[in-house]
Image (cartoon, rainbow, N blue to C red):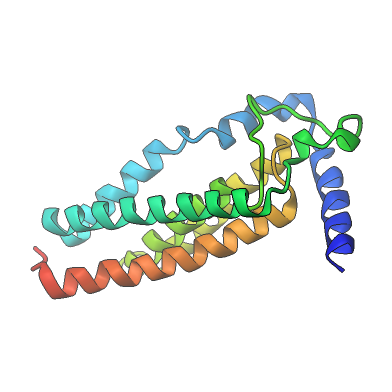
Length: 190
């Protein structure tokens, strides 16, 4: 059953990856770059500051740093534990896919980009939901968009992405609860 699932995952990857064209390659390389969305993170931090104040922002920055470290390290544990080679390292796919990423890591299950962006999206979306009720939907869409870029550039299978998004959503939820708990318990908001 697992072999069948991986076969379907590979075929879906080949299909989605081959939807790309050279005209869009530069765009997707920008989307997949970790530094591209620093302005978005800065805006989210500003919104947190605006709604909760400077002390609360300090708490949120610490909680977000812990969350990103958590998701990143768990992702690495899974990658090293499962040792599923990335599609860009699969010899049987070389002639069937488009690999345009700048580099290709060794293992890919599950996607760190997907888990980190979804964790950030759910965290910020839930914490800011009382003030911006639709923000979470925009951020989740953004996370899925970034996650898809990993298929486009040839470094992750769809199952890597789906599991990364799921883990990120759970992490974002847990850390949003932690952040709001610490805030309510220890910080007087301005």
